[in-house]
Amino acid sequence: MVSVLFHTVTYCSSLGVDCSLLSCQVSGNFLFYLAVLAGYKLHFLFHYFSCFWFKGYVPGVVTAILELPLVIPMLFHYGQAVTSLWIFFLYLVAVVPLIYFNVIWLHGLMPKIEQVFEHYRYNKH
Image (tube, rainbow, N blue to C red):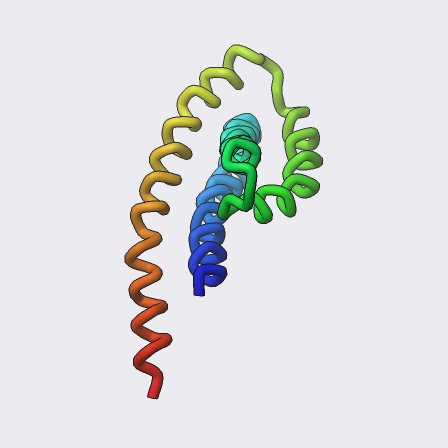
């Protein structure tokens, strides 16, 4: 059950990155997408450091490890869109708080999602 919960939250988190890619594809603003992708990747570091801090498994670390080989080539690909480090930094400063609040929001949803799954699990007829 916990696995389904974390996959659901991971999907919701990735969905935000996918939606930003779609909007950037339409607008042609790949620098903004690079900032979203970099901010999303930065949140992986929290999972890695938490694993070492707690000396054990931390939810999300497996997903972060599995997504690493996918995200790094994307960072290099979209990194070609950087014409100004200053503008990229401004985008990153704007995006990181959005990603932070998205993660907080998703963690707030976890208990509600878990209740739905638990209700379904015990009330199947």
